[in-house]
Image (cartoon, rainbow, N blue to C red; front, side):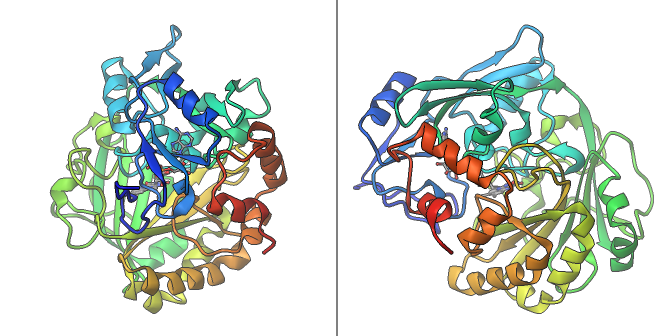
Length: 415
Ligand SMILES: Cc1cc2nc3c(=O)[nH]c(=O)nc-3n(C[C@H](O)[C@H](O)[C@H](O)COP(=O)(O)OP(=O)(O)OC[C@H]3O[C@@H](n4cnc5c(N)ncnc54)[C@H](O)[C@@H]3O)c2cc1C
């Protein structure tokens, strides 16, 4: 490959022979017909080799943009290459909204859904839960259209790119709404111990941030309809705008003044026009049952010196349960512990394994798009419908057109 293509973080250099940027679904169909191996690259924000291939890498960014609101205004059909930031602006013009966003608007909808990307909020399920229809080119070249009437939809949505090339998705939408964002400093550990569930439920979307140099959390970010004043569980209102990552410019963050604003200008932490997060980083994340949230925080606290040594920031969020087979939130209201690490794979990997060791008794499910070292058998065991997923992949891609090393390890490796 003459072109050096990497993921967003730069820690993965793709081994593809060729990179294609088709301008139509028919062109994508021809690429699939060539027999692979083939993988789709979304916006490249995943941190592991899930999108990698030794064959053809296909970006759908050049497909014609589709934002088609249904006549009943309850769903929108979008193309397989659109990014959330562009969709959000189009929906806002229609007076509509998505139920939630991730921390950043830069990611593609299809790529985010394939990995069960999520935001926060005890009543907000992940972004994949909004998918009511999925259209994909299967390994046999057929254009498959699934709706909620099809049992396979719940298996194919968080599909890890395995059932096929997603060319269009239909998403649930809601009437546009406004939120205010507030940031609080120094959240006492005693409050977290006594009130974690209440804290995470005290807004539409709530995040706690800590660098693990101490036991208190450094910040709480609350996105909510109602105004706030005074202390919050012993934390003090921030005296100015903040960035989640220590030392990064606050101008990259969304408005935290408490002024109401459109949903898509408050729910993400980061603005579309700036680099999100730190830019130089790796990320990991594990989901546990919400009832184990405090135990998970205690487990990480027990190794916090090791964690803090390679950490930029850790974020604790809530995600509501869903019914998607490979969702880390499958039938489980969850607490997600996210880690933005320094950009040093060899220093970070041993700590990732350590976090997994202390979380193991809590049956953690890793974020599909981030760095994890859990053995494939342990990952499979965390998903009651994993065997059904493997069967679904075999049915839609019997010849393995979309298989790569990462998927082979997950689907078939013995340990
Ligand atoms: C700065 C930063 C902040 C983040 N914040 C969050 C967050 O708040 N919450 C969270 O949950 N995650 C977060 N993530 C992780 C991110 O949301 C996921 O990695 C997500 O998959 C990114 O979407 P993408 O389009 O970049 O996917 P890619 O990395 O491009 O692809 C992911 C997978 O989807 C497949 N895929 C992509 N498009 C298609 C398609 N059209 N058809 C079939 N398969 C496809 C790829 O082959 C690959 O296997 C963050 C990542 C970064 C870099």
